Length: 256
Image (cartoon, rainbow, N blue to C red; front, side, top):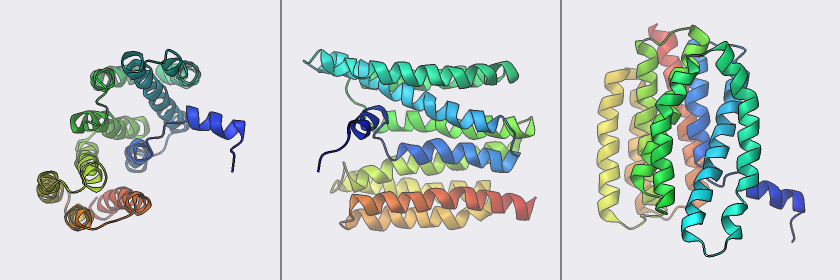
């Protein structure tokens, strides 16, 4: 069955990295839940998602300029890059005027974006290090969102951001064991060891995190040895992503 021109255009514009959306949204929303909602959060969220979309097409343009023999291949990313970039600017300029400290946050994220561009240029976007480099600024958005609501960044915000970093770094490793590194015993063991250490680190941050991180360890240890459909892998990650903010918020509510 053929798809409509509108749907085909949408597929060309929207990044196809489905696992990235939870990484983009969960830390930001967690920061808002913990630090308090502010009206500017309704601008920050679309600005952040638009920035990601623009960055994705910038990376694809750089990659295809180097590896593709078809000169038209990289050009198809110029329109989405321009469109998302312009939409991002519409959101970002008022934010920067209202909260100038956001410019410092953007500067802190810039080196990680440069790493992603570098890996795209070398056509190694799927590298583990590149995935972790993308995780760091995404988790840093928890601090940005938290400060936007509370006006400050306290130790609780840093602990929550560290928990997000532990989880999403583990996700990079775990998903590789389920798809690209399926059957690679060395990678599977490395992922399991990381998740075991993450349990210890998470509990040191907040005892409430023992429950989700033990579950993350179990899924990292048990599922890679089984044939699990990609759709099921994605559904499990959605559930895991929801558990993290739930327990972070519960820990804040019940322990003060």
